[in-house]
Length: 314
Image 1: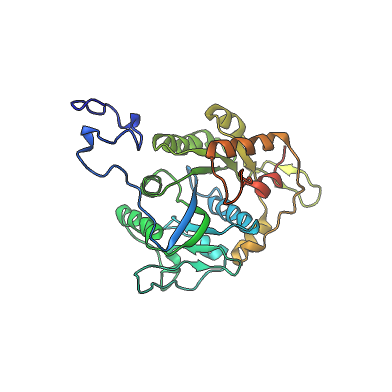
Image 2: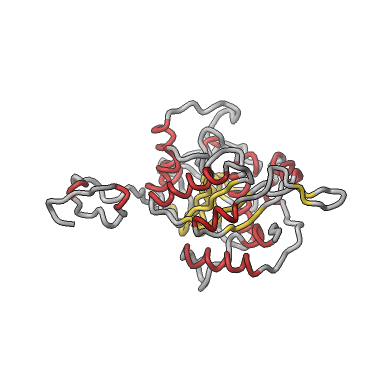
């Protein structure tokens, strides 16, 4: 960019293209916050939604559990500061403490999944968090760089719904490899998914795909699939945005009961596995677009694996 020119639109910038830009006013060239020396996080995956109540934390936890069961070192950063649910799903109630270095140590489940959440800092986990946006955004950054995470292959960030301060902070401050958008089969899905997609695109964040939760309810007596929230429109929306539908998950009340007991790790997929070319193609797309490879492997072992294959309905 010529020395006497300036950006006509922030939307035309990328993290690298702003170097030397006169509109930058000599400020920092990146908002990325570095890890501390006690953390070695290899990949960061955000889980987002355009609205609340679509099961985003369920999908986040499912991804984390499945990766842990595959032998990877996994962590969950609960960035839903005012509505945290991750600790309860894993039965985590003990307060986390700081050390002599001024760093927090994440709660570690007996299965080895590391968690950080504001609920693990509260004297009473039922107390509300009544903080303004800048404070909340600051806490999210502290969860990233003031926590001694140790070695983590995949850190999943459970974000609050919408496109506010926290998603903005995460996208700017953390080295996010990509995001998974969670939605439900409602008429609002068009607007909901596009809001999340457009924010990610504006922030130059890769959208790995879309997961539709509450896709159907299977009758326990006859096995008929009931479209409780109406017909799905996710395939057409995903096609329009050129992103894959990574999975369609059923509404299963038994999972909610297990999560309420704090035993989420014990959830097993009892839906039949289906070898489906459509989803294998989605897997390949996911791998190529994300460019995320686990340590020692030459390809990405579909980290949506069981979650998608076992729950697929087509």
